[in-house]
Amino acid sequence: MKFDLSTSVSAGLPFHTVASLKERLAWLTNLRWIAIISLIFCVPVADIMFQYKIGFVEITNIAVILIIINILYFFIARYFPFKNEYQELAFLELQILTDLLIISFVIHYSGGIGNPFYFLYIVQVILSGIIFPGKFLPYFNAIFAAILLTIWTILEHLVMVERYLLRNEPASLAIIVTSLLAFYITNFAGIYIINNFMSGYRSLKKIIDQKNVQLEKAIKDRSRTFRFAAHELKSPMIAIQSTLDVVKSLFSDDLRPEVKDMVFKAERRTSQVIDMIKEMIAVTQYNLGMEKPVIQKVDLDEWLWSNVSHHKEYANKKNIELIYNHPPFPVMIIIDTNGFEKVVSNLVSNALRYTLPGGKVIIEIFVSDFSYGFLVKDNGIGIPKEDMEKIFEEFYRSKNAREAEQIGTGLGLNLVKEIVEHYGGEISVTSELGKGSEFKVEFHIDEKHSYNSESEIPENSFSLQP
Ligand code: ADP
Image (cartoon, rainbow, N blue to C red; front, side, top):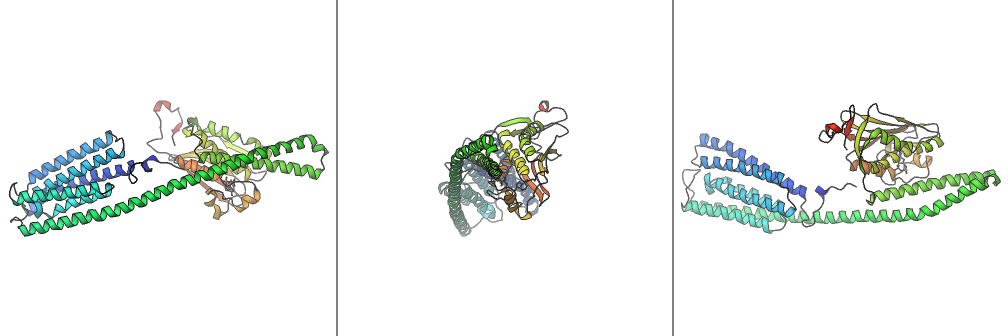
């Protein structure tokens, strides 16, 4: 299972995450750049085309102030990381308030209530309704916007500040009152609707998050039960195996051939069941997070070969040719050797188990300009077309595999996929029924992360980091 801190639920604020707040900070910054560009373009257009009598110089100055503020905010967000979501929310509120103030000045210098763009306040109010949980800040911002517009309108109407007009005549009192009413209604209806919608959305998100936590707990509980059962089974099975071993080595000469055959078969099956139990224990151990990753820089060739060679004995016993093709140059990688040992072990043992005696299993590393990884190929029983996707699901075993190998858990490939994808890789399979299968574990080379320091890279080698 992949856990990503940036998308996890924060303890205090159910809706917010560091990532979602960062996204909203970016919205505000981008909106401000759009506003700056619009101001810079609109001012000469309004001047030349419409000959408005508005404060062009003042509006240009505001555009410059906005540029400075936006750069400042950008640097604060980038170089002074916030310690928690509350600090980040405070920073967002500061931005909303300054934006509302700046809008109020722009509206004043561009015609006051006579300029229909005074509805721009509502954009900020709606944004704050989306960003902030609860009612306080969204309504506070809506009231702040209404107060700003009202104060400027009163000051302009009473000519206590210089008036900038879009039209030749200042707006009549009736128009002013109607416009203010229209603004209040839209402003408060807007924040009411968005706040209701967002609180519904947040409650739903909270329920989903809680269910997710419950689901994860249920999966862990299941793994624990599974693990307990596997542990309980292991000791008696090992005892049976030892007894059969003793019978085989001490009394095999005294046994009738058909009894001897049965003892040998029973011993083989027991050892398969023990392998299965060990796999169940390994899988549940990983799912319960009991296995810590061991991140190491290794020579992929050396490391892979040493893992593949553990399977030589079984391959010989089953009379399968186990071929390992060394790459022509060293490939240095940084991986979780603990996790990937399971990946290699599962893929190679599957290839050997699902290949008939006399067959071949080939393992090789590949490196291209865009990706690298390794292949495990066999000329075994193959996988039916309709099962190609299903084999990565827990407990799924295809019919031909069950016939060829009665013992199996259907857990190995699921774990392999989980580990590979956890580290950003991909696992794919191509297969033809009766002809064989090819499993490919692939990592895409990300320019940003591919190379370590120059000095660390041996000549003629790759240094890759999944
Ligand atoms: P198990 O091998 O214990 O059944 P896995 O999860 O490792 O469980 O594999 C799931 C299924 O995928 C297998 O039961 C089999 O149907 C199919 N499979 C995996 N590897 C191979 C292979 N190399 N050749 C054919 N079938 C395979």
